[in-house]
Structures are given as structure tokens and as C-alpha cells.
Image (cartoon, rainbow, N blue to C red; front, side):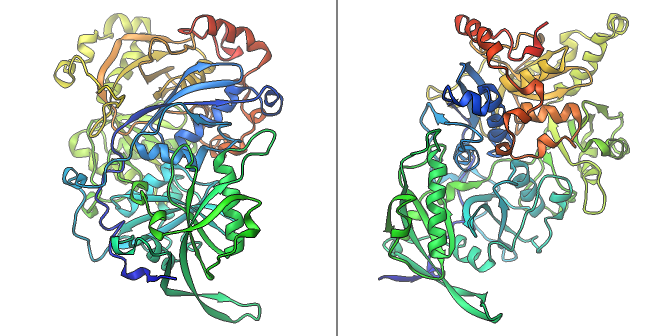
Length: 618
């Protein structure tokens, strides 16, 4: 047996992480579907899609998604994301209780090439800061949210964040790998205080394991190694109460799950987790699953870190179809593609002064800012912001407001972010200037008397548009969307009369901005073939052609519920798998029987869906 001390391996996979993990934005079609008998057990397909949408946006962190077609038992939709977002879809949402029978209808986008990409990335340094430390934090599958990762990157001033699935004591966790000079155990309190993170820990995944597994990769000379022994040891409590040092060792297994024998079906991902749980029980250690995609590989490479090196896996053949040893290098293939370096500088999550930043720098590209807060902290957040900006903040919803700031005021806005001692604003997001310019125009339109005297023309509203965006934009013939350093899209505003219409818009389209006070949204312009809620009024005069939305992401229908009913609503705090269809608010449920006629009308005219909710009909 070939033994190799892990500390001698030669390639730094984190410190010298020299690739662009976010790469290009791609559109990719998916479908979810239910069997006919599942309609009685799980509920209508649109209710299932509501949970799936929330998971894809809030947990996997894709940039946006929109519906293409709707059938009685299935929905086809398009997801827009970086390559890494598609990889996270598998770990977060490929679950029969979240996205039933989720299947991609197009191949996954290729990962960004590893070599030479660092030349185009100015913020990635080839020199390591000696004060920086490799840190691993853990979070349960049930608590993992995309906003938490962005908050931790900002709080710890880390250029990138790696996310890896691991089994610890039989439970599914995500390990977040960062390099930072700021980490002190327990410093995650700010991201937990502002609601971005829940139960973020550092004890479940020992530091020596973090350093051994994630600090270095596999050199060319070590590709055939099948066992790595850690120099570090840990102490284990024995039955007699005494502690004994134990040495961990790692090895790689290639595994395939058992075929699906459940009548209602389980995803490959769920079956692979069952296989992994058996391996963990047998090996008594940690089971890592590094590689990921929205469709699970036929063979998964699992890195086992345990006290004992096992060769007999017969006890797990009831859960695993095949198991065999593999070189350690197999488990590290595409390891670096799991690191997120996507820009987050146009968002403010933590109360940190700019001069103290070394790796992440602000991208305050506009003068228009949306503040996010808990409904009970509305006044405190407003008061703080109003002491900085010239014009009073304008309330958008129960949990958001709109402000305009000057160049000299932007850096001071961080002082209004919640800290461990005081709850104020939870997050600030810079948005295109036109959104601030448009809001008072909507107010004028809603008041006929004011409209007659103060309603600006389109030319007055967007005086510099012709200097900012080209008239046309051509995408490549491989389906790649406009990407780094920007996401250029065409935006339209739409007004609505009823809450149910707003929820429909968020479910069907890519809604980026909402005002429940003035009842309008900004959304990415739908395709002509896209279904329509047929309850909105799209304002063509407000169309913004090829505008850069930076890191703005779609708002899910479940998030819209929080905008209407306040941030204390239980629904936004639940993991999607815990939200059964009958627990969805009544106007986010879909009545199967009464909507068969709706589906038939939709199928006869693909460009229009008369109504998605019975409450939308007039």
C-alpha cells in the first residue's frame, strides 16, 4: 500500500486559487414533474414549483429562473446562473421533496478552464498574506442559505469561498472554506445577528481536518497514492472518560448508488446520500463529496477521512451498487471549481470600515440603494439612513426602502448595518439609478392632479440612456448570456392591482425589484413565448435596453410573501423541503381540478396563460 503524508503534497488549492469560478452566465432548461397519483399526495405541480423556485434562488444561489411551459403534471423552466450555481443545484435542491424529479433538458455548461485565467483577475494575488489563515465553517443542510455565504465572505474579507458537502455524524453539512486574516472563533455573530446566517459553526469540522483536506491538493507525482495520513491527531473520549489520541487517514472511494426501487421515486442524489451514510457508519469518520453538477455523475468520488482504513464494504452493498478504491487524485478532480469568486461588492452585509478591507472592494456603481431590514426595525433603519443621505428614504415594502446617495455618502452607509449590539438595517444593495428615477414618476401617475403638472416625459426620465447602452446586443451562438463584468439585460416595469397578481409575476418571471406600496415591479423583459399572468400592465415607456444589473437576483414568490406580510412570516424561514403544499398560503396554492381548463387554454395558445391562480381572475 502506498502511503503519502498529506502535508508534503505540492499544489495549493485554496491559497493559489487562480481561476474565475463564476465565469459566464448560462441559461439552462430544466423540468420537474409529478406522476398522476402524486397529485393527490403532494399537491398541484405549481405549488411544487413554488418550493423549487425558492430553493434554487435562496439556497443554491442561481441568478434567476423563469417558466417556459406549464402542464398538469410538469413544468419546464429556464435557470440562469454561473457554472458554480448549476453545481450547487444538485447539493441543495435535487430532492424529491423540493424539486420532484428535477431533470436538466440541456447539458451543463463547461467549467471555466483552470490555466491562465488569473491574468484577467486583478484581485487574485499570487502572493499569500502570511497573516491569512485557512478557515472551515460548517452549516447544516437545513440552515444553508446563499446570502449567508456572501455575508461571510464580506465579513471575513475573503476573495473566495468554497462549498463542499460532507457527512458528519450521519447528518448532511456544508463546509465553507475561506482564507482570511480576520477570523477569530465566534466572529460569525454579525452575519447571524443581521439574519443572513443561522447556526454557523466551527466545532463540527476540526481545524486539523480542515488544514489537511483543504490546504493542499495532489501533485503529479502523487496521483497514484491511495492513502493519505494526517500529521495532526485528535483526541477522542473513551467510555472510561479518558481521552486517547487518534490518527486520521484519508482515502478515495468510487461509488454508485442502488437503482431506484421506490414506487414514488428518489433522485440519484438522495440515493447517493444513503450510500454515503452507510459508508460513514462503517468507517466512523467524515465522508466528503467534492464533485458536483445538477445531474449527478454516474460514479461519485468520495473522500473518506476516518480512524481506520477499511477494505471490506460488504455491509454497504444494500445501499451502494458498487464501491471500489481509487487514487486520491480522483477525489480532487475539479475541486477548485467549487470556489465562488463572484462579485459581491455592490452589496453591504456587515458594518466594516472600507480602509480595513484588503481583498474585497466596494462596487458602489450607482447612487440608488435598496435597504433591507426586519419589519420591526423599519424606523431605526430609516432614521439611520436619513442622517446620511439628503432625501428621506422611501418605503417600498414591509422589509425594504429606497434611498439616493451621493458619492461622498456611500462609504458611510455601512454604519447603518446591524451589529452584534444593535439591530438596524440588515443589508444594502446598489441598484441601477433608473429605479430611483422611476419611483417618483409612479407616484405622479397614481395621482391624476399631480400627474397633470409633474409627470415627466420619458426623455426627461432617462436623459443619458443613449450614452450608457448600445442600441443592440448580440450574444454568441452557443447560448452564453452577457456576463462578466456585467449582466446586461432589458428591464421593464409592470404595475399590478392585486397581491395575487404580484405573486404570479414573481413565480412566472424574473422579478428583481418590488414596491408593494406603489404596486409595481421591475423585471427582466419576458420572451414573446413566455406565459403571462395577464393581470399586469407593462409600461413600455420605461423599458431599459441592455442595462447592467450587476449581482441583482430574482425574487421568489415565497420571498414576495415576506415583502407583503413582513419579515417575521414563518414561510421565509423554512427550508423548502419542510413546506408542504397544503401549508403554502392559499394564494400560493394551485387548485388542480379548477385549473384543468386553464391548462387547456394555455396549451392552445402558448403565448398566454390566462391565470395561474383562481384568485387572479376578475
